[in-house]
Structure formats: C-alpha cells, structure tokens
Image 1 (cartoon, rainbow, N blue to C red):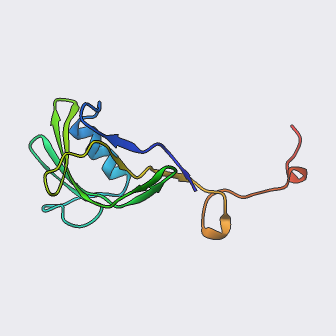
Image 2 (tube, rainbow, N blue to C red):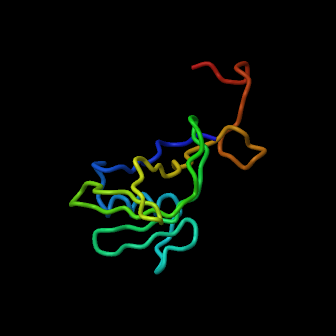
Length: 119
C-alpha cells in the first residue's frame, strides 16, 4: 500500500475548519448530526467533532477516538478527547494513493526488468 501524508492536528496547526472538512471528505468521513459513528464528523460553529478510525503508522498506532477540534480563524486552537483532556497530537489516517499487488485489487503490477521496453 502507498499512502500520502497524514493530517496532523495540534494546537497551532495551520488548518482551518473548511480545510479539515475537505480532508475528512477525501478520507471517506461523512458529515453526521451526532458524530457518534466511526468515520463521521460534525461541525458546530468553530468546532469540529470527529469520530476517527485507528491507523497503524510507521512509528506506532493512532487509536480510534472521538476528538473535538476548536479553531481560531485558520489555525487549530485546541484538540481534546471525549473526556475533555487536551490531546497534544492527533493524526488522521493518510489517503491511500496506490498499491503494488494486483492480486489484492490494487492498481500497480510488478514486472521483471527484462519485460520493460527500452526507451
């Protein structure tokens, strides 16, 4: 699997609520009234509530959790979990941009160098 970069959310991050909503839509999240199900989010004023899904990054697991992200203009003001505790860093799973195993319905095929035409 080949992934893009993950979106990192932390106090002071240069992202606004509209950009976050666009990123969530790209990742397959859907707007919901309550934001209770995984991969859903809701917007209330300058706060976005997100029910994330977990993801395994190269440096460890990012747990599935409910987050409330408050904004001041186009910057993240705070990120809090569902108990109200401040979260120093939360990462959303990166966008899947490709793969290399066609047997798993991915979009790249491995070939031998001898099968590649010379330019």
